[in-house]
Length: 300
Image (tube, rainbow, N blue to C red):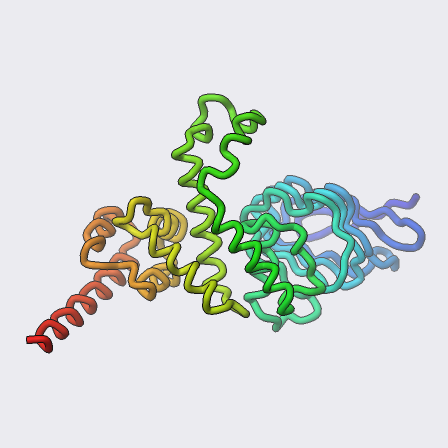
């Protein structure tokens, strides 16, 4: 078995030559972006080997070759900084846990069509993240009507689960340390609601093929958890995870999630932070008050 190495800007790719093809077996280095070549020393790169990039802490973007036939077990598992993967949208042999715990992964792009819908790239990434539905990680069918139907069916199931679903099983299996915050049922249910909020927002932002009925369900869920409701996870996710990202505040105002009753509480939560977004909400609230005053005057 022949071994090869190729240097990158800040690292090194390791290969094994097997039956006239190259298998990428490992990587060492600190690159934030890596492009895997189509060939290594003249041999086509057809496989990303088991644990090839396991637990890499710096990798943010990677482009896999069009010659690719498959990806081995845990190849990119625990790559916490990984945000974007580019690969061919065709049938690939995929091992287990390939993107396990890649919490930053937000796009899996089509290398053959860089102009393809961003919506599909984001939804495909969600199948191995927010949706936890690896059976939907099928690049060859991503974006097809049947695939979107399967995605939304899984999303609807996730949204419909009770907030305490799985808590007893977690305790029985000893998956969390006794006495930790994660063993508190209230905290567990809050995190489940936050997961649903993230999923609802993702689908509304990337609404390709989204049916009107399911859109309404997602919007209603978000509105049921804004500031001033019994639980405020929609507001908490926006404020704590997207504090300066205007599209999230625009989504909130577009859903009429900012009202006379909850506006002051939002201002207090924001304090001296996120000045631009605070100003945006203040302008929206002013326009809301003017509309209400105009309607009142009209009624008189």
